[in-house]
Image 1 (spheres, helix red, strand yellow):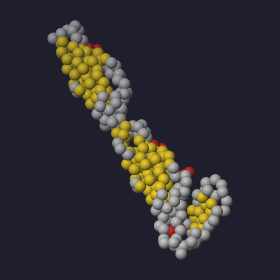
Image 2 (cartoon, one colour; image 1 turned 135 degrees about the vertical axis):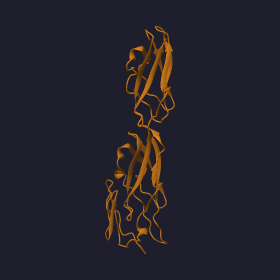
Image 3 (cartoon, one colour; image 1 turned 135 degrees about the horizontal axis):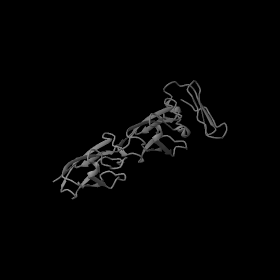
Image 4 (cartoon, one colour; image 1 turned 90 degrees about the vertical axis):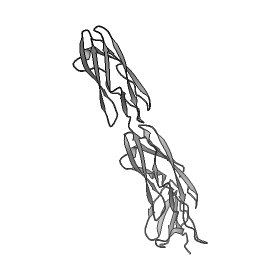
Amino acid sequence: MKKLLGICLFCGALILAVQLVSNQVIQISGTAYAWEDYGKNCAACHGVIKANPKSLKFDPTKLGTSSTKEIIITNKGNKEEGGPTLDLWIDTDNITFTGASFNEYSQINDCTDPIPYLSTCTITVTSTPTGYGKRVAGLAISSNDLKTSEIILQLSVDAKSPKIKTKPSTVSLSTTPGGTATKTLVITNNGLSDLIISNTFTPTGTDAGDFLVQPVFCTPIPQGQSCSLEITYNPTVTKISTAQIVIDSNDQVKSSVTVKLKGKSK
């Protein structure tokens, strides 16, 4: 029969250390325990960690928006008939994030107390992406499970880019010399994150002076919303006028869009 040999030696600050050798020793919260070397099948003499789920995939989100998911930690230590089962201890001071986007995740937990056989605690993970695309990291959890002293869970979230759409793609106007004509240009965000226009709407090109754009800029455009521009054509003589508006934004696919302006006066 496997026996628990250790007893409480002293009480103090939280210390977690596992020595995977004969007479394995663990000291937690000032309590020292030791186990005889029963080999690889010593499941009855220590807690066994199980995480559910084994990975976290957060829903697609907008840049900078936080979302949370929970991981349930269970002590699955095997109990032999008449044998001991020990509490599972989580080293809460060393729950860490690894990987390229480690600093875009955080956690809180209620795993500070020992976890009895078949009992649970919860780790709540928060994702706050600071860059576009798939943000990947790992969550490392240490415990007194002698077979698996550390587990690493995979974390991922997709921070979706904004998507710019302009309608129409070419603005065509006509009037008489000295007259005016106006049309509306609509800029829509079909993406998830806010669309940010980084420049003013200043016509450029051969006949830029024949066109006026109001307003001269748009505030950030949330998902599914639009910004409307009034394009006014005001030629002074009979002519065909051409110009364009360049729209620079944080759309990760089309960072710059050119809208052609065409005017005709006769």
